Image (cartoon, rainbow, N blue to C red; front, side, top):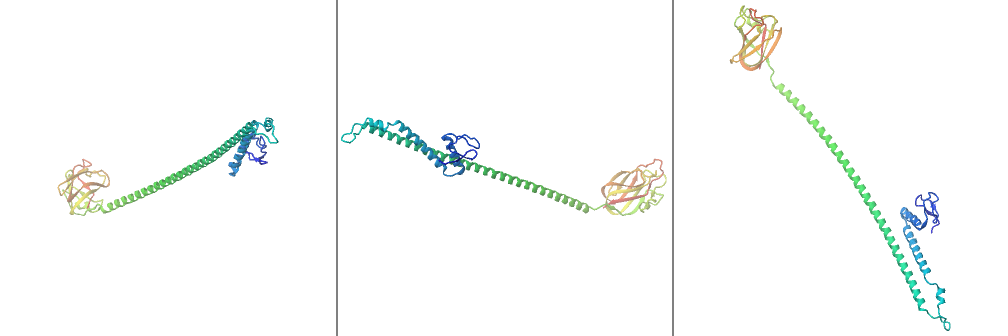
Length: 323
């Protein structure tokens, strides 16, 4: 037996026969405690200590069995008492004594065999336990590795999804920008392609009556214009003739704030259609959208006056717009 051993709790050097550790006071009494010390040292250092421990256990078992049998077997002195007196110096063999010796030897052999079987069983148990622990440790490590791999794969999948979502969002924004730019371009093209209304050329002017020349209405001067003959208001008319049949889309009047402005009028076109307009009593230009009509003439007929007491009609200027 070694002179010193290590405490299984604090690893301090202690006497193998000590009942308590001098450092941490861990109980160490008995063969089981010393066997535990040897098994603990064997597990920590991974050396040949398991074999030594098993050998010690076998020796202890065999010693105990042999001692018991020797204590129970009859002693040589007692056997010698019953030995017959030898004849001529030759001792006589006692059959009973021989049977007892054989029985004692048989018991010892059986005890030794039993101890060996117990030792082998203990060794197998220890090996099996060590193998099971190793397998369990391997299984735990494999499970941990599998879990770690699954976590990494999940993280990579989440990152891939986030990148795909970001890419999809960027593509959607780009597509929307392209769509907006295309729509604006198409709108600009459409506006550019659509002809804008322009002032149509008037080649002649006639009127139901006048005190000022009807052509003053197209002389681009706001201080001169057409005025009907005195006493003619409702029913008075002035007709504008275009250079060619064209599509008329709107008409503009320049009026002052006087009492001689017409209020309700209707327009008659060369195709016979009629459109009505109500003028405002203001000083300046006022323009009115018309339903587009193709015509070569526009006749303006007065239906009512701004002032019922007015004795004639006055219009400073008229412009016709179309394409």
